[in-house]
Image (cartoon, rainbow, N blue to C red; front, side):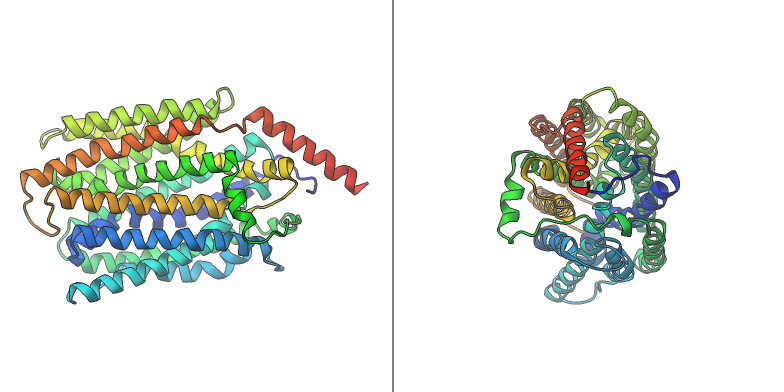
Amino acid sequence: MPEIDLSLPRRTALGYAFGDLGISLAYFAVGFFFLFYLTDIVGLSASLAGTVVLIGKLWDGVNDPLIGIMSDRTKSRHGRKRVYLLYGSVPFAISFVLLWWIPNDSTTAVTFVIATGAVLLFATTYSLVGVPYQAMVPVLTTDYDERTRLVAFKAIFSAIGTLVGGAIALSIAQEAGAESALRTMSVVFGVFIGGSLLATTRSVKDIDKRDSVAITPVPLRRYIALALEPNVSTLLGHKVLGAVATGTLTAVLPYFADHVVESGAMASISLATYTITAAGLVPFWNRMTHREDKRRIVLLANSSAAVILLLIGLLIHTSSTIVFIIGSALLGAAMSAYVLIPPSLVPDLVDWYEHEYGERHESVFFGLWMTVHQLGLGIAGFILGMFLHSFGYVGGADVQTAGAANGVRMAFAVIPGTFLVLSALLLQRYRITRDRMDEAVAALQAKHNRAAE
């Protein structure tokens, strides 16, 4: 591992983080609205729409780790990671556009096949750029706090992408001619998604010089053992549970606004309030990680979020718009820690695993991280679709039954909070703390310095 300046230039950090704006714009437009789009605009049943989402996420379980392995084994003058952003950004943008051009005048079987194909294409290109992009963090800096700061910048740009992608999609859905407007939106967003990622490839050109540390060549079966290492499996388990929580929350929001608050516009207002609060408090939680154990912060934040969700879900009614907005702000404050902290732990796996086992892997860890994240989202979409179906929800109906509305209320109040608490409890078993990471990085640096003498 070559000597690397721990003080990452702010310009480089911001240029790298800017790429998350495009990724998050696509991700959250899909996460907040795609299930609703399939049921209430395309016309699929809730169960079939949930199945489409699940198929896409199950495919991610295959392509994320494979792309991670492929990236680690890539040899290119543009580096092992930047090359994927350079040549994958435009296909990713096009795949996003195609999601919103699914016809609604075909038979159910044809619509289901087209929707599934579009989701599989999007999932593949998302992984193609997303895995190498995330894997740049441990290459850009080896410092524990510097990595957290870098993730904090990403979280802020991600929040902007959330606000733009999710809020605009939700707002468009409330207007007449939503299908045509969504198609126009998809093209505009697609141009921005591709452009932001290409801008990032220019900002991090220097990574090509650093992205040359030898990756340990191992057979494919060895990656299974890597995923089962206690700290790795704990972090991955935490992520999949958290992804079920956040995936359910984002997907159920438009249903909750429409059928509980009975104001579709409140979905956009709630999302904006939540996102602005979450982004605003990222610097606070970043400072907290310098003083407190990250695991305990997540436990406190996730438990608080679960209580807030329960209160919102059970107490909100049609005239509670102000209370809903206040609840959204409180939820954003709690979830800000979850947005920041877990992603900042993944880069440490790279150096820790090399220190403990003498093997260096980079993109593989991020491929696994994205695999379980997408799997959790797929499970979330499937659970929500089946949950709503069991309560009698009928996609596209102007008026839902009282039972269906109660199903939406319960899905919002109980499912996300339960999984948030479970994910935080599991994270308490994670053993790679700041002190242990500092020792590992120092030992690795000394080892490589001796080898260079």
